[in-house]
Image (spheres, rainbow, N blue to C red):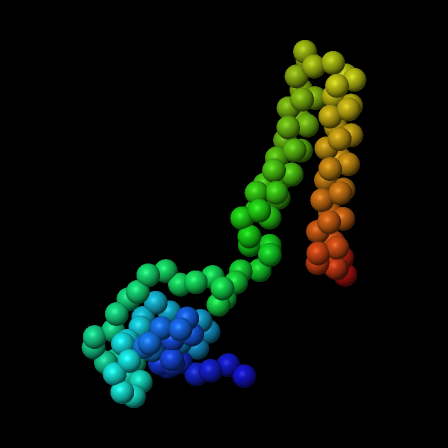
Length: 122
C-alpha cells in the first residue's frame, strides 16, 4: 500500500524528515525538531541529489542498455552506406552484413531472455 504525501523520517538515515509526494521522495527536508512539520511550513531545506538506491531505474533505462541499443541501431545505416560505396569489395560487404545480422539476432535473444515476451506480437 502506498503512503500518502507528507513528511516522514528521512529514509537515508538523516536525523530529520523528508517529504514524500505520494510516489517518490523529494529533495525537500526538514531538521528534526519535535513532530513532523506541516507541508506548507516555512524553513524547508533543499538538500543535494537523491540516492538512486531508493528508487532504481528499470534495466532498460540504464546507460549501458541505451548505449548498446544505440550501437546496434546504427548498424543498419552502416550496412546501407557500405553497400552504396563502390570501392568496397563485394566479399567484404557480404561478411560485414552477415556479422551485423548475427550480432543483432544475438542482441534480440539476449533481450528476450532478460524480458520474456518483449517481442511477442499479439
